[in-house]
Length: 581
Image (cartoon, rainbow, N blue to C red; front, side):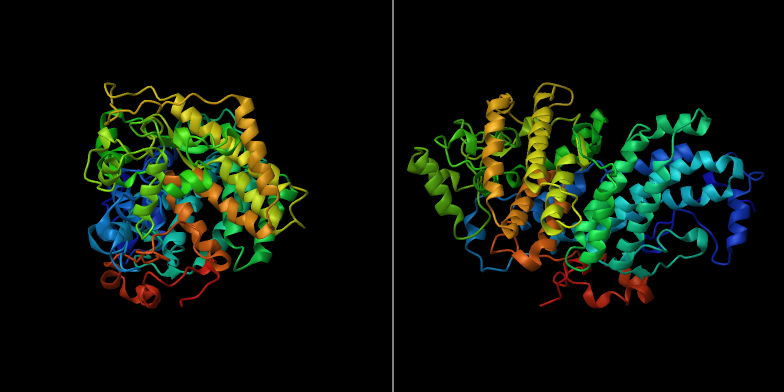
């Protein structure tokens, strides 16, 4: 019986890790190629539709409601990006609260694993295999789809292995090769493979241009991530290499220097300017408050208080009398003021939470009655009187491109590279990179805030009352320049050790709640030399990795056995350079 691509049945079992096709176990590779890719047996394969489909799954480039809900309910609290004043948790024993248990914990443990193999990666092996089935004269024009989609593959698997450590990779979604039960590859193997592939793609794309062939004309239309811009795809690939290279700073500094030195020494294009940002906006207005991340922010409003640590320790705000050149201009667009026009943050749970609320509000002249009410979180965020929150005008801009890779991250990576490896950094000035990163971040946040055309009565509506002062006018160049001068001078006077620490805090400020995976990963990477830099509550037990889905032990037992011994929360992943205490 001839099996057509359009009639393939989707495999439901996650651990099969197949690409969504039902085949008998006795099939062989030659049979597969004959049945699926013989041009006489099927219509022309649609690279274009498969390519677009591989870019579209939610939670890949566009965060969705479910994972966002559980992330803000449990995971962000772990490293101080969301909490609320709550006496009960302030009084529990230290090291007693966990992110991986309970309702949200199960979702956190399983979502990224399952989504990668069922939603994210299902089209990518097909696209790679289909290239081999084409006549030689057509391959050259369709290679562009394969190169670019494999950059996406690197993006998704880098994130996955950072979360879980060893995961199925080389045999993932391998039904076409009769590999239904995928082995777990080591994080070291995955990183090495992805870095090598990204280098090969960079080399291939460096000499590539789009022609007037039908394949290339369709590529320009179907590339919904980078709009057919091959240079931007190169920048994405090299920026991924830069991020992953720095991730090796503890376990393989020689390899890290090789990768970073290649990028810097050869002046390879990276995501470095405003227009280079890699990201995708959600255009499904009809369902944006039903299926996508804004609904999570709406329902989990009490996990979006402004963290006192960012407000004061990173953004430099100590109250209305703070010198203007000390206050990071992002304060006003990352966060919104409270009902009284003040910026009051909330600490993570612990012995300092209520005393700091007391001190901050007393300094602003609040009454004892107001302070006591503020310590009770049972009031409506829509009428929030006392605390600052993440700014609704900024984060409910439904046209915003959710950043997968932004230029500020690149410049912070280059700043750290210049400090760690000056011998290969090509004369890069870390202070200039640091300044550029903050400057671009200020520009981006103000642009997202400024361009929000939505409100409480728009379609779709912002689902909350908007505080006065939330759409904040961007300060003039002299004000921003004075702040950048002050901030850069302070950075330049730090030791190399403290400069790297300060770079982390700028990553935390910029990536924040829209790219929490990188905040968590960078915290773990730097933990060997710095301890946990994120403002973690003493009540929380630190999480080094996610548990694997519980189904893996029963449905893929032989392969799972290889990783079962470290299926826990406290075994550090390979690139941390640390071992379990």
